[in-house]
Length: 67
View 1 (cartoon, rainbow, N blue to C red):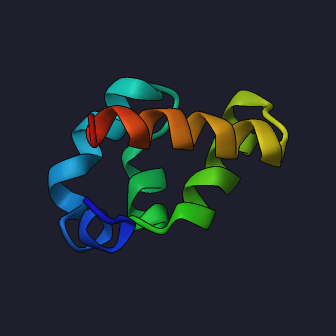
View 2 (view 1 turned 90 degrees about the vertical axis):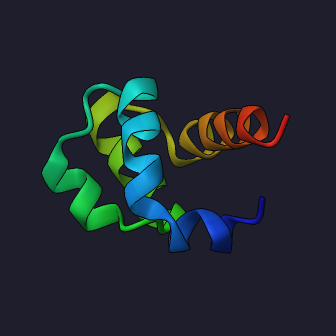
């Protein structure tokens, strides 16, 4: 699955994202709307990750989706 497909089906993936990162609120999900940069931004804010750490977390999670 491409990131574009994930973004296009964002409503279906919101639950999985919130299961992985439970500090993300419904308002965060509305802000993110499947956009990777915004997910990275919110992870940095909510978890205190650097942008690089947030990007690595996203890549790991995304990799598991495609496994």
